[in-house]
Amino acid sequence: MRLSQFHLRTSKETPADAEIVSHRLMLKAGMIRKLAAGIYTWSPLGLRVLRKVERIVREEMNAAGAIELLMPSVQPRELWEETGRWERFGGQLLKIKDRKDAEYAYGPTHEEVITDFARAELASYKQLPVTYYQIQTKFRDEIRPRFGVMRAREFLMKDAYSFHLTDEDLAREYRNMYDTYGRIFTRLGLKFRAVFADTGAIGGSASHEFHVLADSGEDAIAFSSHTEYAANVELAEALAPGERPAATESMRRVETPTQKTCEDVAALLGIDLSRTVKSIALMGVDAENNPQFVLALVRGDHVANEIKLAKLPGLAEYRLANEAEIAEHLGSEPGFLGPVNSARPIQIVADRAVASMADFVVGANEAGYHLAGVNWGRDLPEPVLVADIRNVVEGDASPDGHGTLSIARGIEVGHVFQLGRKYAQAMGCTVLDETGKAATPAMGCYGIGVSRIVAAAIEQNHDASGILWPESMAPWQAMVCVINPKNDAAVAEAAQALYAELSAAGIETALDDRGLRPGAMFADIELIGIPHRIVVSERGLAAGTYEYRHRAAAESENLSRADVVARLG
Ligand code: ATP
Ligand code: MG
Ligand code: MG
Ligand code: MG
Image (cartoon, rainbow, N blue to C red; front, side):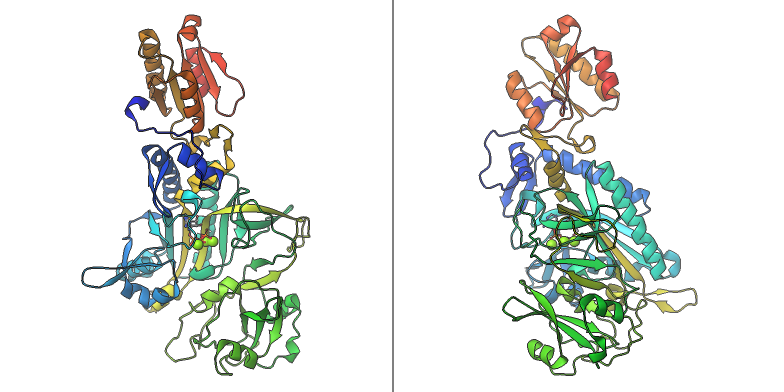
């Protein structure tokens, strides 16, 4: 690529409204241009980087056995009604109407569409397991779009969905995707951590987030110095960029399910179970002892569908509440919680995960008893324990009993979930199993914020002069800079020859033949973060050398042409 024929438009101005460095640098480098709040055009330069990320994601997903498809972004309301998410998804769902007044959502995620595809296309267990993915534009009407493409309203996501006959097979693919994500972020050259996560509005059981470590991250994550233990602290709303979580703020740990019993949970939360005759529930209270939200701790089959559990901020502590008290708070009738069967595993739903309780639509044929007759693990994912851990600070003992906790800020760039069967169940997606019976497949879903990664990489890789792209994401690996190309034919020719040689050697190279003064040219190349810069000048040619500088190096070196090629090759 000759820069004289490319669209490169950098700016010296520091954009006033850009709060974090990646947003500032993407604007200064001319990678993106704002069209409306949270909606951006990717310039030719920006798009080159975005495509790099996309390519690595695609290659690794293909290598992991996932199959690419492409689903529509405009999705009919009726589909979202089937899962109840037309209402429940909340304000992030952009709703639109066509000329006939038919309603649609602009897809913020694609569980409904993929399940619709699967129920039509999958007939037999022989077609399972299968993992589909797409790389596609999403729209979420974020309350506070900010930080450029980091928290945009329109953004590019890789989303994958897997279908399985058994839970074991789902767990196997979950691990496969988890490992694949590790390979993707490693190839992208990012420092990252996988952490336990809560399953939020998407619901399900096991879930991990992948975070790029950066001080501007909106999430706080805690991880052990000795073990793999890591958890998202979910302080996103409470903290400003760069702010550290204070000792008084609540931190939460989400554990993988299955092994927890009522007794374990009771011990953890200090509850005397012998006092509990029916299902118990916990009420969160704020500092003034006002009810803030409710944890339903259900030992048994039944949870009423009328439970409207609100997530409210400012929780100070939990206390045990009786059913009548909870019912009053919820505006429900006492008796809304079903009978206890202490042999059942326990379901604790807390905070954001509360939203996922309403997602459970199994057996919704009798009002008030949506969970009636549920076979845990078959119909629904095994229960999740969401425990509350308070006052965690740097240096505390890790909850897994090994080592101490470090706290860092992170940017969520990926998220994997074991969804279980709730979407397939709600939408009547079945396949015939080995015995010819209809079976509801278990699902997993796996997201990566492709466009967010571009910003996250800059947060980790920049200096006072601009971006330092990891090699794998750079718009070009090398830039050949021509000093005075218009007036010096020999220099222009030598630069052209080097450019051709590097390109032929498979190094993605651009030629800066714009004829800018050296200072302005070098400033641009540093700003846009090209890893290798080679300057071709009259003085160098006379000495038989080319001035080579790595973007991260303090000094340049004079190398022969062969050495330049060898260095980059
Ligand atoms: P966040 O916690 O940052 O709001 P999320 O948990 O809502 O993200 P998911 O539903 O897990 O997001 O979507 C998968 C991935 O899509 C996220 O891990 C993130 O990298 C990316 N993503 C989500 N929202 C945005 C956004 N508004 N702008 C850019 N990328 C986003
Ligand atoms: Mg979100
Ligand atoms: Mg999140
Ligand atoms: Mg997420």
